[in-house]
Amino acid sequence: MPQQVICEKCGFVLYEGTELKPPDEIIQTHDGKCPKCSKKISFVPKKVEVRAASNTGKKR
Ligand SMILES: [Zn+2]
Image 1 (cartoon, rainbow, N blue to C red):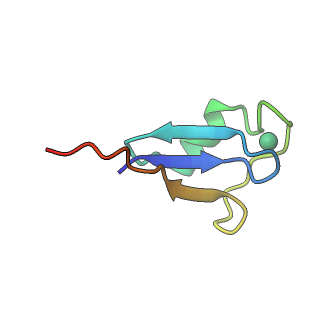
Image 2 (cartoon, rainbow, N blue to C red):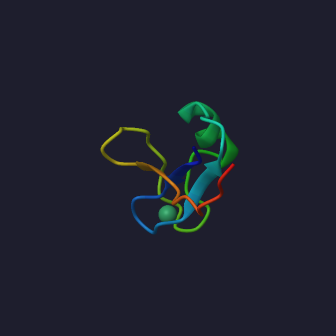
């Protein structure tokens, strides 16, 4: 199931993919801040929204 990590301030997609990535890695990827609004990324579960991207209905 795809994972989406979104900046809580501006809604920028910090990470999107099918693998679960460790928060540290996502933070490092963006130099510790949101590339769009420069908000410091913190991975307190309440502050960062992690949700599954909607399923497009692929079926096997
Ligand atoms: Zn942002």
